[in-house]
Image 1 (cartoon, chains in turn cyan, red):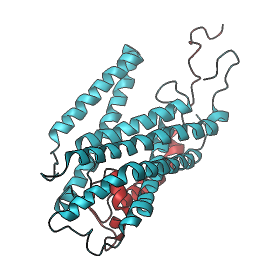
Image 2 (cartoon, helix red, strand yellow):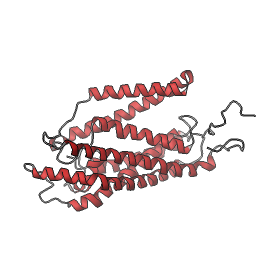
Image 3 (tube, rainbow over the protein chains, first blue to last red):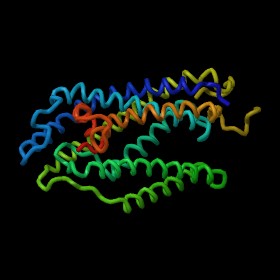
Image 4 (cartoon, rainbow over the protein chains, first blue to last red):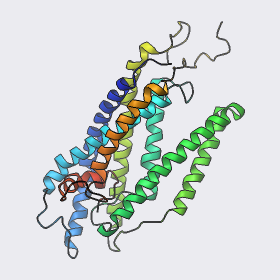
Length: 250
Length: 71
């Protein structure tokens, strides 16, 4: 068993997550804020704008800077902690991958399962899109989709590991991926659709907003994967099995 | 060549971390991180622990851009 402490990896995961949160903030501020502003302008131009306009407890300037920073940084730290735990479990259990490669695979897998798969069914929406009365239902469905995605991905992973001795790693991974895509497709088909985009809302704006949201996810997981891989490798190096001189270092 | 059965490029296997060592940290970190995500994504939206809408308004832009249903 590996003697590296989960605590050491958890701390490093949250640090890498903090860095990912900073990167997310920059992308959100540079790519996303103009889209949020444009959507709020449409919202306020529309009939009976809700609570943003009248006596907002937090000004737009604060929401777009300190507020956005708080959200993205806490989000990064939390995801970093969760990803570090997944890494602790995955290390040495998903094949012959070193710490950096495991960190990259875990990050890619989490981007897919908690980012992309839920996004394709219930994408991010700018202000002015979405009926406040259905927020509980939409949140429930969104969280349910994330849970389902994680569950199906875990199932696919177990399936792949089971098939590997018979079919080889490549074929087993392809088959498990096909099973995952088919299962996700079935979940998409069975879960209710949510489309509350107003009739006259600009299509280009919603596309750009969602693209910015997806870019944030991609940046969070890429930054985390690279930063945590670096930190984890250094934390684990002394505990790893000794390398032999004849083998090229990986 | 003592290792002729193993391709030269195969990385050395890394030992896994024992589950009993991981479990308490997993439980602790799951509570903390899920609470943080709840604060960022859900509080004073679909559910509320605190009165008012300051948390909601403070997290507003992040909530939209990170993909949570906001309002």
